[in-house]
Each structure stands twice: as C-alpha cells, then as structure tokens.
Image (cartoon, rainbow, N blue to C red):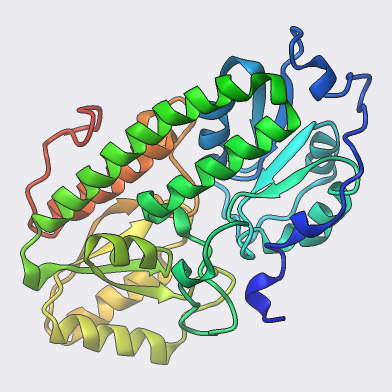
Length: 326
C-alpha cells in the first residue's frame, strides 16, 4: 500500500469502547447530562470545525496553538496525558502530524480517534511534487474540499452521542452555509486579480489546494513539509522563475522562518529585479485565539484578501465579513 494511505488509516483499527479517564463517566452515557463531551483536536482548523458542530455539548481542546508548526510538532508528556483524558480525538491525517503517528495509534486503543480527511476521495488529493508517493495534507486551503471534513466530524460525533445527532446536524448546516459563502468570496476576490499576475510564491508549499480551487499558480520555496530545507539550486530556480514572470511580491507565513524567502528576494535583486514581501499568510496554523483570524473563516478571509490586494485585485477593504484590518 502506498505511503499516502499510511497514518490516514488509523480509524481502520478496531476500537475499544471509550474508557473512563480521570474519574469521568463515559461520554455517550452522559451526553444528556451537564458533563460536556471532552474533545481534543490537533490543529486549530480542526478545532474550529468541532467547536461549531458540537456547540454547547462539548469542550474542545486544541493541541497546537497559532505558533506551532504541525509538521514538526512532537507531543510532550503533558500533551499525551491531555489526550488520554479525552473522550474523542480528531486529527488531520495524510501525514500532517507525522511526528504523532505512534502516539495516535496507541490512543486509538482506548477511545475513538478520527482523521477528518479519512473519507476524502483519493482522486481529489494532490500529490507531493517532490515525492509522488505522498499526498499534500493542506486540504483546508480549498474551502469547498474542507467542507467534507465537517461531514466527517458530524457523523463521528453523532455516532459517539446519538441522542444529540439532530443538534449536531443543525449546527453543521449553519457552519456549512457560512463556508459555502466563504468559498464564493474566495472565488470572487481571487478572480479580480489580473490574469498575468496570478502567481503565488510562498515560504513553503502549503497553498496548492488554494491555487487549484481559485485559479493561482503556486510555488513554494520549501516543499510540502517544513522538515525539508530549500537548497541553493531550489532558490536559484525560483529566482529565475520570479524574474522571468516579473513577479513583484512573495508571501511569508506565520509558522515558517523566512530565511529562504529572504534569499530569494536577495537573488532577484542581484538580477536587478525588485521583489517585496507582500504580506504574511496563515498556512499550517490559524491566527491567535480570540481573534477573527483565529477562526477558520477568518484565516481564509485574511489569506485570500491579502493575496488579492497584493497582486492587484480588488477585494473589499475589510474582507469577507468586514472584520479584517483595512
């Protein structure tokens, strides 16, 4: 079986029913009580889905905050203890949380553990351009694709807590409506970029799904995983691409060091071509908790609005919901 299926298939394990942890009663039996379902999500993007679907009937703990790169994240002893107390765990899969694979396998023996990308049609997945045996895990960059994760979370919560199934479905419908509007907004603002300027150069290759969905040619300085380092040949090749296509702006990312990106800018300058950093995008993590950008909708709003504005498009001054800084 090819590598793309590794780690996304932990849910194929036969699960032992959830066991009481730390004195908690079992989740399904207590779903109608005042005790909320205790849920852990690995990333903020997944946590946002779960929070919207579970509503007041669950408490969601996000393992990785806005400064953490999931490609490099290794759970601490306290992280593992926190997951052991959970009734249910959601993770991305497709090797995004590659350092957590063994931990998730162990945790799945005592509680349900779900990859939100588990049921995605393999035909919709993009291959790693550096290693075609792996799959690009950054599916949340295409809002219409990420909506399928909402369905997975909703069905998993309903299976865990059937008495609340209608409540979860109603919440999911509201959230899916918002995401459908967000997808339409992204299509509109990216399409406002002049056709000759639709090049997105970023710190690492996390935006291919966004490019496919909304019509941008995307190039990353580093590969899909930030564990890889851009070599001199990669940087020189990208510099030549930028100069040939007269690209004037590249984009930093909140969780990725910009050393290689600065090398690209300096390389272009050496060829007499000026390039600037056109903004900072959210790639593998959302913005700070409590901020608009700290929601999935706000994250995508920030990204597509920033990209469109920098590349010559005409997005609204304050974005999708009027909540971005002008």
